[in-house]
Figure (cartoon, rainbow, N blue to C red):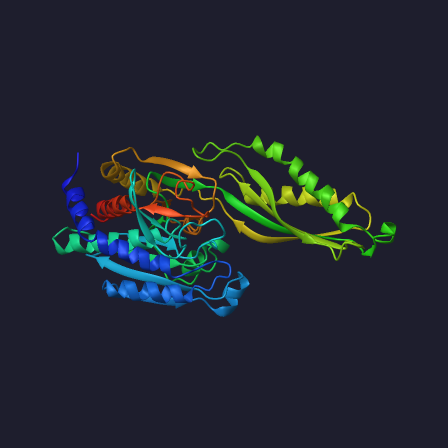
Length: 418
């Protein structure tokens, strides 16, 4: 049964929905590929759009040395703050504007924000980042707009909303959400981060990236014994890593939506020329950790596998460097309040039960949870990343999901602030 709050919010969102779609299109049209990660221009465009909505925007450029340290060119974090009444909690809404490069296979302009009428799902917008997660720039901005109108119409709300729009999720979130919290620019009581509409995400995997350099000694290919073959040693190390996959499959998570731990080698380079014994090989490893694992133990275990395998080869030196450690998203007491409110109102607007689950990815949400802030992921999008073609060609968003997610977020926040 639809409540009076849901009826009122639904009308507000519907009235402003054309403007919300236009806002999203403008956000999609400005490229933010990461790499290379030159995102300051996009932040300026978003700032202009938000100020056009009457929202005061704080722009916080990240220092150049910090930006370079994560392999990016520029990043400016945006904060919008709005207070309702006196006292009450602060709820942060975070979405990231950086995206993976479009790649090949697109049938539509990745930055065209083209809207196509789908006979099954209605109007659908195409573009890189339209689902992950530029859509939630629109979801959160227009949820705030709906809350402002509710308050103007006499709804009693007590608390504050902060929009956190950041630009480094593709490289780990260190100079986005983590930087905002570490610099003391925000101290929210709750956080909702970019997600999809048909489930509230309350847990996700952690991720460890290691870079391994295997060093030998070059020699002429006509006399292989004159060198120490780094590639031959690397094959032995890789075999040990791949052999460990079977034991990781036995480490299963109790969280719905997450299966087991994984390891993958995703990048490899090395050698000098075809006729030279290779003296150096470098490769990178992606190790996904289920929420139940201890990251420090997972890293020690993987380093041990590499070191033992390398030690079997005479004359070989192995160097291991941590590139990334993203901790799992785990439950912080109080997060259930967000989950239940989003589920309750989401079921009204979507007409189906809204599940609670985990995902095998890692996200910026972990930075809020690691700071002790009750955090969940919820926003505009389909049931799975695959349905949105997230990180793939022809990424898309069903605009009716954007409409309903905006209303769901607005109602959930109104309930908590009420």
